[in-house]
Amino acid sequence: MDKKKTLGTGIVLTELRKMLPTYLILNGILLLACGAYLIISESNDWRVFTGVLAGNIASTLNFLVLGLSADKSLSRKAEKKAQFTANMWYGLRFIGLFAFCVILLLFKAVNLITLVIPLFFPRIHYIFEYSRKKFD
Image (cartoon, rainbow, N blue to C red; front, side, top):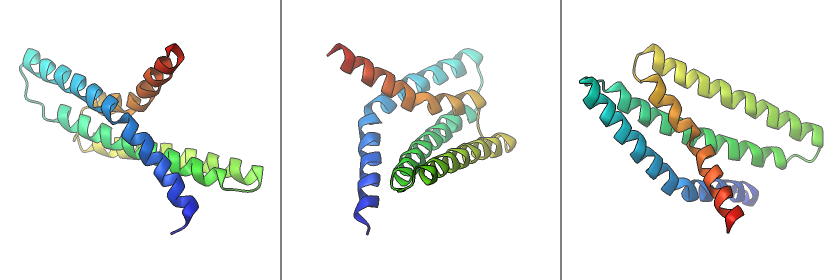
């Protein structure tokens, strides 16, 4: 296996491991909110929980592809090729994410709100991470 690819994958997986506690805390809060919503509304809409699961899968895969595409872009020698690679992967990543969400919504397999909320978990993690480092 190519050492450069292993290095890129290793960095992305290390970042995901760092995010795990934040993901668990945010998912706990989200699941408690979903449970409270279902109790208050007296409904048993299972799509709320499949939305949380699908949102977490989409968020994690999106972060993995982001990291791997950044690594691939940085491995390009020419600046224009690197920029093209970054832009191409950016577009493909969002088209894939959009298609994933639309297909799940068309089949009425998920709740829209609980599908979208986990997509913000990496950003929330980094806001807390950088805020904490700034005050240390």
